[in-house]
Amino acid sequence: MIDIRRPYGKGVYMSRVINIHHEPDKGSRLPDIRVEEPLTLVIFGGTGDLTRRKLLPALYALSTEKRMPEGYRIVGCGRRDYTSESYREEMLGEIKRFRRVEGSDADLKAFVARIDYFKGELDDPEAYERLNKTLGDKKTYPANRLYYLSTSPEFFQPVIGHLKKSKLIYSAGDPDKWSRVVIEKPFGRDLESALGLNREVLRLLNESQVYRIDHYLGKETVQNILSFRFANTIFEPLFNNRFVDHIQVTASETVGMESGRGAYFDQAGSLRDMMQNHLTQLLCLVTMEPPSGLASDAVRNEKVKVLQSIRVPKLDDVAKNTVRAQYAAGQVNGNRVSAYVNEDRVPGDTRTETYVAAKFFIDNWRWSGVPVLLRTGKRMAKKQTSITVQFKKPPMRLFRTVACSDDICDLTETQPNVLTFRIQPDEGISLHFATKRPSMHMVVEDSELDFGYADNYRGTLPEAYERLLMDVMRGDATLFTRSDEVDAAWRIMDPILQGWKERDASIPLHFYAPGSWGPLAADQLFQNETGHWRNE
Ligand code: BG6
Image (cartoon, rainbow, N blue to C red; front, side, top):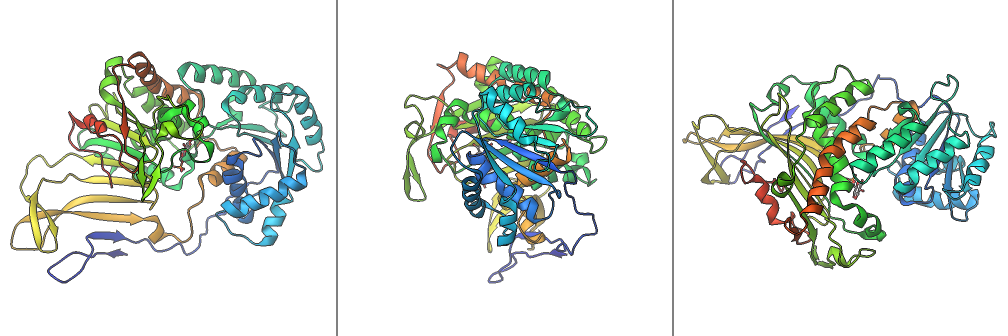
């Protein structure tokens, strides 16, 4: 159903947005996807924030939706003194706080009854021997093992080393049982450390046993980029340098350094925390070539190819094409907020960036000459992740363009067609195009076709971690990052970090007001381009 509402004449109110409605899902004949094989899921970092906010609520949603296998057991590992009972009790409260799927009391009780606590230090070999003994109780703990490393990155390699040494990892070719390891981000802090970590991990495990997680890939609307591009014929022929002027990706956040996050963030900065992984993944999905199929390696091969075509920035490019900044003190929604340097657990003289914007070029047949701009920052005007593909203007200007408020219209510049993927919030897709404004004049104005998930599908969208945990339990690595993908992403990002270091005195660290769209200096990335950052 297409519902068209237009502004037309005085006193008649009509929206300028044309909403596209899709008939709500009336139930599906597709078989429900669920995990079939029994398994034991061991979470290292079992008392941490991610486990509380995301992992256990996601597993609870999967269990309430009957997607978990008949036999499964969850073991939370940590240093703190819990018994299994006290751990279950605390996690029950956390699941209630953070769950997406309500479920009944019985669902909740049945789920937490499957959780145990295991106390041990991450670097203590004896703890792994004990863990091996505990998991050896085959009646309680199914043989298939999923190890989730929700720890700080310095433990990734040691934990895998201990698991291997204590024979907690099976050989990759074992036909009867499997072991898989999920590694959280950050995967390395620069090219060298990422290469080193990959080398170590692949010495201990087979690539098929490694699942490097980037939660952005689990978001419904991120997966929709592929279906939008490759399930439609009308847009893909336009996705190239003949028609596209530029692409911009924004991931802005309003949060600062709440809950002591400053300690981690100051070691990372926005480039490592968001751009090297989440934004780069979005860039890949919107620019990659069509894969030959949906098998995990077919998709990942195309992502690697496009990453390898991105021009590696030289020192001068870093100065010209990147902007780094930090938030100053100010006000957000009438409340005073501190400058980044005064945040909890952040050193007072830090030069870590809380905002980064950068312009890249993809040197391949399809995208040659089309700038791709990425930006991300904390404490910005609003929480928003979006990808905008701005098309070129028509080669000849036949019509005059107006912008109108009711009956009052002013001449304005011709507007280009713009396609926007709203990743979050208000998930959807919109397309701007010109239409003739009803009047005796031959003038056009900008209209918008809008598709919103909320208007079209019932219920909330599944959380990224639900999808990703289910995929790893089913052995599907499509939405996980392969080692060559991580390396290729670092090859582009590492020179920026190096450039900032080498030219620290001449590449400024700008400042921006909290609640703003970042530093004005970021506008300079459009200096030789048409367009501007779309702050909407
Ligand atoms: C995480 C970053 O990976 O992503 C955080 O470490 C950031 O700094 C978060 O806040 C954003 O995720 P989302 O899903 O809220 O956009």
